[in-house]
Length: 120
Image (cartoon, rainbow, N blue to C red; front, side, top):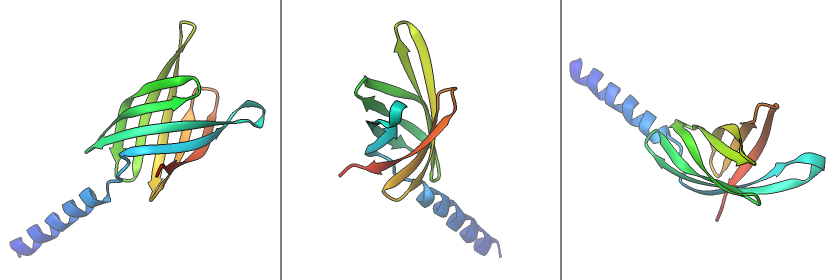
């Protein structure tokens, strides 16, 4: 009975490890902006277990991400930007679905949701 229980527990642990989304690589998104214009943004991620590192790049430049986390198929991170000495934080949460990530970005003025696609 104990060996059956241990085998079952091991299977559950391996299932959770296998369920972690692989987000390492480049992802691109067309993010809606003011006046209906879109902005191409590239996310470069490197996942190491539950830790997520990387950058967010667009026409304004490239910023490192902070507080990056991977939890199964969910990711979260923060992008800190400086405009003329004013710091602005954007919080991102996302759900990985194969070759896409449904991302919600919140900069304190209301959330925006968009889809990032794995770059080939």
